[in-house]
Amino acid sequence: MENFYSSSSSFSSNSIKSTHDVYLSFRGVDTRNGFTSHLYSALIRKGILAFMDVKLQEMVGEDMASAVFRAIEESESYIVVLSENYASSTWCLNEVVKIIECTEGTEKMILPIFYHVNPFDVRKQTGRFGKVFSFYEERFSDDTQKVWSWRNALRRLASISGWHIDHTRDEAKCIHRITAEIFERVTSLRKTEKATKRSEEKVEEIDSTTFDSSVSQSSSSNFIKTYDVFMSFKGEDTRSGFTSHLYYALSEEGILTYMDDVKQLENGEGISSTLLEAIEESEYFIVILSKNYASSVWCLTELVKIIECVQISGRKIFPIFYHVAPAEVRNQRGTFGEVFRKHEQRFIHDLEKVQSWRYALRRVADIAGWLIDGYSRKSEAEFIEQITAMVSKRVADVVAKKTSISKKEKATKRSKENVEEIKIVAVEGLPGMDSLVNDFHSSVCQSSADVRFIGIFGTSGIGKTTLARTYYQLISQKFEGKSFLKNVREVSKKKENGLVFLQTQLLSEIFKDKSITVGDVHNGIDMIRNSLCHKKVLLVLDDVDKLDQLKVLAEKDSWFGSGSIIIITTKDESLLEEVYKGSLLYRVNKLDRREALQLFAWKSFKSIYPPENYITLSRQLIE
Image (cartoon, rainbow, N blue to C red):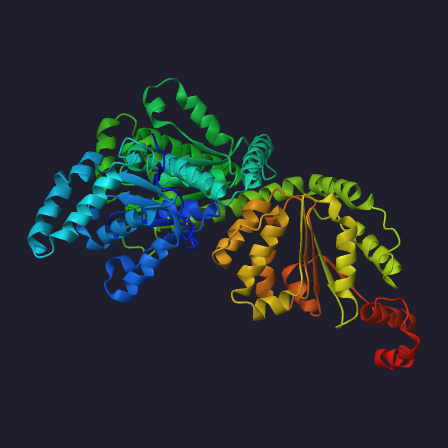
């Protein structure tokens, strides 16, 4: 059912070159800080360049309209989020007309999302849509053609098979599937069968990593860890919205999260003991305190158990105050106060239980957490990104402590298998390189890092690039992908959008696909780390002189797969130490007179010795 729309006309050969993979059209007041922000974040995490109009939508003026229409023209696909107030915005309606126009005669795609609206109301302009158009008929009585174009565009749009999302559907699951569908479409357009294969391999490896982490033991206490995170929440408040989005964000980071099934719980099929075991076997706890949280005896019992585990083993709680004030939770006021008055009446013969619930709420409300309400400048998606980053770092720190010895042993073994087995033979024709390459190779083999960052530094013209190029050519056959970025300093300065150009070159060379496009540096960073994190690559960054060059091309070892080698040549030793602390730094020393003369002759005359009539001049130049 959820299929894209494509014009039946053939693809136009003179179509405008795409700058964006996806254009998002939506009504800001309805979905900007909720559904649309989650969808946009999910697309970006996948490395999909999406255009989300967050400010221009509520403004008027030719300049703004031109900018948005240009973005529509330069997009390959369109997602239109049709919400209750969508048609009340003439801006949105003009966008839809433009989108329909851009799909004519092309293979561009439209995916409509009917967000809490009936597709019939959109197609026939009945209900809320009908009322809005009755107003337009009066307001634009002198321009009926405009109103007709809006009606026609909505009819066309509503006739396309899309997604119908209402309160019965899990938003996060829908977004997950929509993103997967868009990702498949984008990779198909880029004609990268390898990209699809990489995506499948990545999922398999993430599953494997998750499995490995699920059976490991905690180093901080003597409990057996089955889950990284246990989520406690009131189902009717947040299960299909905020909580499901957070769950998927954590899962995408490889964090094994326990999220209980509320419906199953209410059926009373012995879930109590299972859930309590899940709490005992979790490393961290996320407690989402919402308006009706305290009305659930089950939630309160969960919380008491969580506090108990924290007191025994020192584990951590991350509280999220979702549209409730921490003071309400701490002092049991407002809706929390009303609920507890009912609890005291209901459990009048077991007030000790009620007191344990009160104590647990006070404890959790005293912990620093996140306050999410309608007054925050951040969207829910931004909060989720921040929360996920925090939890991911905590989980990674625990895993690092538990696996440091094992990881070092594996890395050492891989080092021997991947590099030491390479026999450095004589480098024909390059004077002075034999001994230099062998010495450099010996230094590389001493590093036991899983992903090796190796800096080659020294003065100008001393042979840094020649050494890197020679070594690159000798070992490149041992890697799944390779890229040599020459003259990074010059390219980043002289080329328009130089850093983006370098990111594109890196990805194109590694995947041998010249059709890969990068929209901006942030999109490039996402594409590099998402597509290379499980790929063993050899990368050379030649003549680096700025910190930002390293940050957008190869900032962290987590961007690259196990066994990768990243070589950086530079004149600035401090630059390497600042970014890659503890990595191997190799100084290229000054050549002796004989080697210098031979190297000069090779570069100047492609001969090991200068021509006889240039010997004296050559010697003078190298002094």
